[in-house]
Length: 183
Picture 1 (cartoon, helix red, strand yellow):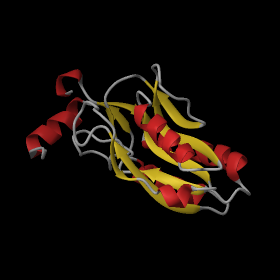
Picture 2: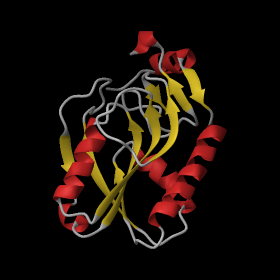
Picture 3: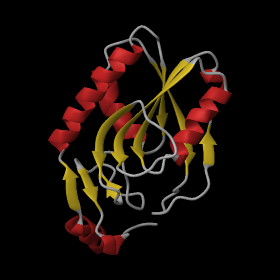
């Protein structure tokens, strides 16, 4: 669904900045340090959960100073909507995962449904181990635990740093909460 320019501007104007770009960059540095401690020497296969984690992955990988390989996995519940539905698989690299130490990178831990499905799929596909990392975790009950978290924020609809609002705002520096009237 395309947003017209006035709707886009209105959503941006009403949003509240929860985490600045400087705070996000510091969070990425902390994540890199924690992941290096966990995974250095394991030659992990890093799986970027598309599409949201593309930005997180692009910003985090240059901070990881150890041997790794990159692939992607694409499971989604939102498909451009503001409410999640059933899991829809677009790409599941089953053969590439067998016997590998896997790091799953995702943009957000909301309810944890998508990340839980992805992590279980990696185990089912024969991963030697599975580690998870998310840039943003909402403060709320989750279906799964995450190994490394960048920042924790209030349980609101968010955008920025890979998180989207109806397919837009992924490129915004910082994490913003959408005004209730726009959800």
